[in-house]
Length: 484
Image 1 (cartoon, rainbow, N blue to C red):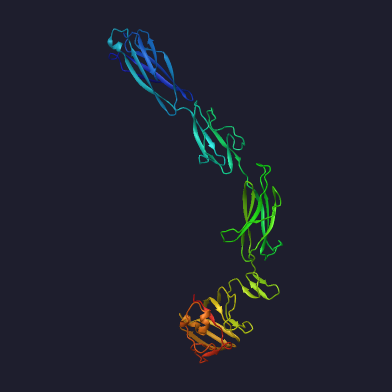
Image 2 (image 1 turned 180 degrees about the vertical axis):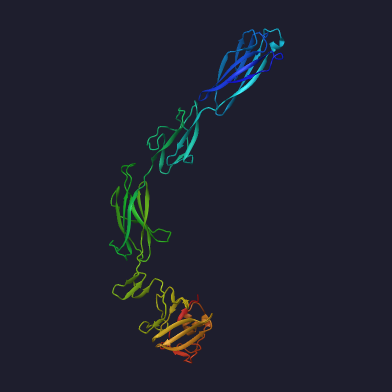
């Protein structure tokens, strides 16, 4: 309870005393209680007083009878109920007092006071709307306020969830039927959470175990097979539509690294609502991996799953019949086939037994890097031409940009030839051969003499012959791409 007083009348004869308070009645109502009284300073002030108290536009009037003697002449207590709004609200209190029966004009004019009290905001609660797997107004939840005692209606919100229809709201996240719809009134004054209730519009097919194994065209497993036997477990949903059935099960393939899928190939479904689809598809190169995509389709949509047909890798493989050997791949042709890096340390010996080709022939399938020695040289050999007899071929780096070549015929040392430029290495070729075989330089870079039967060697330090006879003495001719 608070107390305020007005100013004194006639100097210090009497004044208004107001005792007041405010309290909450319920969630949206407050009660202002006032007691307006007259405080006499002297015993001679004994006239009756008329006191008016006004709160929120409503006035309570009382008459306080004359009482002999100094002191407080107590008035009656009166209350006003006021509304608690959505925010704190100030209510003014005005009190006036006069003594109309007094002979003194100042008493008749009386006095007044003004004060105020604050009613706190009304009670309110939060209603939360949980999208329950979807979105509500573009978010996972939406909240607004229910004010005490006010009408509240479930709002019409924007609901979305792929493949689902919105049924309404419930107070449990697992409920499958809605208890509240937009526009329904909610009267409870408490915090509440409503959960969206959804109904699945479509359930896509389910794909289980999926395998793809290299095979022959009949589906028999084969490591080097160019086909693949595909098996796929699948099922379609019958809970939303009892007569639902599979439309097709297909497979498409693409080489690993490609972006476009090949044509869809039908598999044998193996059932109407569930089963294991099977089929043989191809063809797939042995040395490559392929992605396979299986698609299961029903009238409502489809589902896909992928797997891989792995490449076949062989450290060493023999061609059927024994006339071919391959390293790093499957043997598919006669002879030696190398599909991995080769490192050779030391000397390379060539004999007529190993090479029996004419001077213009090449050794086929010689690719990758050949290392003669980590400390001497690292060349890439593009083409190798025929050699005869037993020869030893050693490349030795002398000083940039010179290259030295050591040749031996039947293991007998001949000498060294200094090549003044890298392109001079082509001087061992005739102009005719260079026109057909060389793609790095032009014939004008070459020096040669004689006919196609003679091959000039350059300057030999040991005074050996300056030419060799074709297909008889020629050691070997290499196209050199360049030094590292």
